[in-house]
Every structure is written in C-alpha cells, then in structure tokens.
Length: 238
Image (cartoon, rainbow, N blue to C red; front, side, top):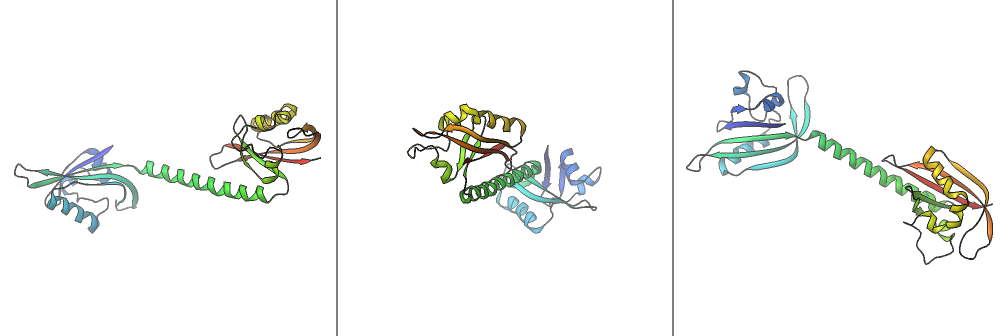
C-alpha cells in the first residue's frame, strides 16, 4: 500500500491517508501533529524536504532504509519514496506531497538471491579445484539429459577425440555405448532416488576404435545452493 501525506511549509503534516497513519503509528488527533519523517527524523531528510520547498523540484529515492520509531522498538524498513511539490498559480510552492511504498520484502528477497548466487559461485570454485586435483577421471553432469558441466583433464581425455568439445553436450552423445550399457540407467536412478549408484567392472568401449575394457564408476548426487541436483561422475579402469 502507498503511504500519502501532505506537508505544509512549516513541516507539519496537514493530511495523510490511513496507510501512512498506520506506518507512522499515528491516529485520531495525532494525525495533524505528527511530525514529518517520523519514520526517520534526521537532519538529512529534513534538508531534502526544505530543498523541495526552495527549488520546486521533486526528489525520489528507491529502497531507502528508514527507521520506524514507535517508542517501544525501532524497526528498519526499506521504502521507495518521493517528495513532489504542490505549486500555487504563481509558481510558489505551498506544500509537498510525500508518497512512500514499503519494498522491504523485495529488498530482502534480492539479498537472499544474492546470497544464493554467491553460495553457488563459491561451491562451483571449490568443486572445480577438487576435481582438477583428483587422480581419477571426474565429470559433473546436470539435468535430465545429463549434460556435462565440469570435467577434469583425465575425464576429457576418455573419448579420445580432443577436437570435439565435451562440456555442454549430453552424456549420450559423448559416451553412446557406455550409456546404452547401463550408465544411462545409473544416472537416471541417482536423479530419481538422490542416492549414490556404483557400477563395477562394466564392459564398454570408450573412444573411437578402442577395444572393450572394464570400468568401475560411482555416480554421486550433489546439490547446489538452489537445491538443484547435479551428479559427480567418477570412473576408473578396473
């Protein structure tokens, strides 16, 4: 709800709507005596109000922190607000309309989103360092088609096709035979159950023209800061 108040040249509130009265904790006869910017009565805001009266130009702020002082407990909220001059026929500013809208929920949501993004960045950097230092072939896939998102140098070398990129491609394109021989089912099972699946000594040909070999593989579920599931896919020749 938008708070509206009309402020006279002596900085007294002459009128306000119910939303403003509720925000300022004013009622009844107190409405007329309620000082402007009781939400945050500091010299800076009073100077802004004086400037609008002097210049006749409007002022607006977005997501400005204002503190509500109700005599019991101070509460800081965030507001979009404007001071708009009301001019007489001769151009003289006779009053100012204050409009305010509480955007605290939006600011907090944005802050939480930033925290999640930062958490995702830190998690990804840690994961990159971890898999690159590992002595095993490790890849990370995401989504129902199991697209490769990360892979260390050992894993990137498995297909034997250095000129073809792996990252961003579905596992079925990169390791078609392995997917058909049970790896695809294992990946789907981890997404379905959220539990690690291990394949031992499964036979497959990895790479163009390569002979059949036996492999051990662990498919480990991971969750990022957004609670999205991705898979840590480790392999080693048996």
